Image (cartoon, rainbow over all chains, first blue to last red; front, side):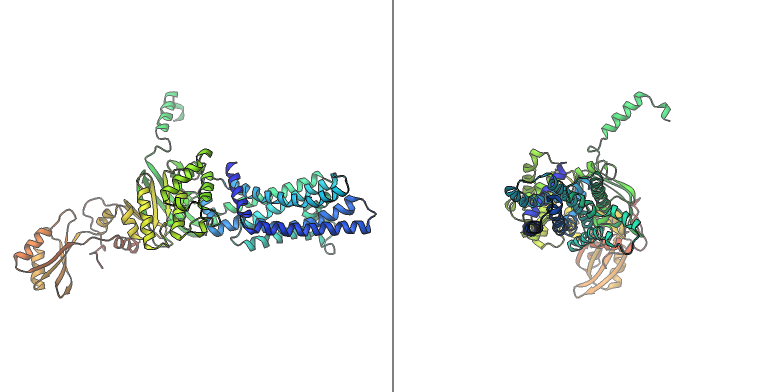
Length: 247
Length: 358
C-alpha cells in the first residue's frame, strides 16, 4: 500500500508541478461551465420539462464529452513517460510488484478525476443557491461521471503501457473509447439483434441511465468489468517484457 | 527416502537451513545456466557464474554481447527463459521482492525524473525500497553524502550536469543499504574528470559491498575490479583475475630484449640460455634489434639473458617483461570466440595463442 501511495504521490506532484494539470483543469472548467450555462438557458427558454430529463440529462451528456476530451491527456503519460525516461526499468528492479505500479498510477489519475468532478459540481452548487432542487438525480449523474471517468482511466493506462510515445497513447485511448461509443450507431447495417448486443457493450449507453438520474446494478457492473479488464490488460502488457524485452 | 526421515533429521535439516539462510550465504550473486531468448534470438546462452560477498567484478564485453540482458535477469527486470539466479541467496524469480530489497541497480540509461528535486527523487526511491518510514530522510541524506551530492539536494535532477546525474543514480542505488550493487556502464558518456571521480566513488563502495560493474572500457576494470568476466555473443568466455587470464591465453612468459649486435649471433646466444623455449626477432630500430624471448611462466630468465648478451660482448639496450594488457586479453578472448577452459596445470600450451603483442 505504501508503494502504491508513493507512486501516486509522485505522479500527482508531476501533474501539479507542471502547467499540464492547470491547463487541463482550466479547459475542463471553462467548457463544462459553458455547457452548463447553455443547458440551463435551453431549459429555461424551452422549459415545460422536469429537471432530471430536461436539464440534468443534457448537462451530464455534455460533461461526458469534456471528460472524454481531458482524461486521455491525463493518462497518456503514466507509463509512456516512464518508458521514455527509462525509469520503468528502475521501477522493475525495486521491490515493487507490477500490480502496485498499475494501482499507483491508477490512484493518481483517479485523484485527478476527483478534482475534475469536484469542479464539475461547482455550477450545480451555484444553481442550488438560486433554486433548491432535488439533489438525488444529479447525484446519480455524478456517480455515473466518476464511473465513466474511471473507465476512461483504465483504458488510458492500458494504452500508455504499450508505447513510449504519449501522443500515440492518447490517440489509442481516444480510438478505443470513441469506438465503444459509436459502435451502436450503425443501425442501418446491423440487425436489431446485433444492435441489442452491441448496446450491452456500449460505454455511453450504460452512462445514459446515470445521466437521467438512475443507478442500475447492471450499469455499475458493466463499468466494474470494463475497468477490471483494462487494468488486467495493463498488467499483462507490463509483464510482456518477459518475452518482448525492454528496448 | 522420505519414509526414513525422522523428526531428528528434520530438526537437523532445518538447523542446517537456517545456518545457510539467505543473507548469510557467502555467495552474493549466483547465476546458473541462465538463458534468455527473445523470439528466435538467443540474447544470453547458458551463463553461469558466482560472485562472492565483498567482491568487485568487472563485466566486460562489446556492445550487444548480452551484458545488459544478463544484468536485467539478475535484477528481476525480466525472468530468464531457463536457468536460475539468486541475490544474497534469494531466487530472483521465486522470491523477487526479497532479492530486490538486497539490490542496488544503476541502469544503463540513467533512470531519473528530470522534473524532481534530487532529495525528492531519492525519497521516492527510498519509499519504494521499503526504507522504514522514520528512516527515509536519514537514508536519503546518507546516500547523498556517499555520492557527494548533498550540496545539490534541492536542485532539479534535470538541471544537473551529466556527471552529477550519474551520481544521483548511484545514490539511488545505495538507498536501502543493499548488499549487492549492479552498475551498468556507470561512466559512459562522462568527461575524463567525471569518469575518474565516479571510479573513485565505486572503488570506495566496493570496500563494503558486492559489486558487478558492467562496462566496455577496459581501464575501468583494471582500476576497480579484482576479477573479470568476459562476455561475447551471449556467452561467458572467461571468469578470472586479469593476471590468470593472461597465463591461460599465453603459453609462455615473454621478455622483450633490445640488443645491438649481429642478428644471427644474438639469436643463437639467446637460444642457448637455459629454460628459454623460443626466441623470435620482432623488429629493427636505430637503437638495435628487438627480440622476444619466451620462457615458462614459473621461471624468470631475465638475469641469465642479460648475462649471456653482455658476456658475448653485444650491447644490451633494453630488457623488460611483456605484460599483456587487458585490452589484448579481451581482444584475444573475443576473437577466439570459444570459452577458455580453466587451466589445469601451470603450463597450458594453447595452440594459436601465440606470441602476444601484435
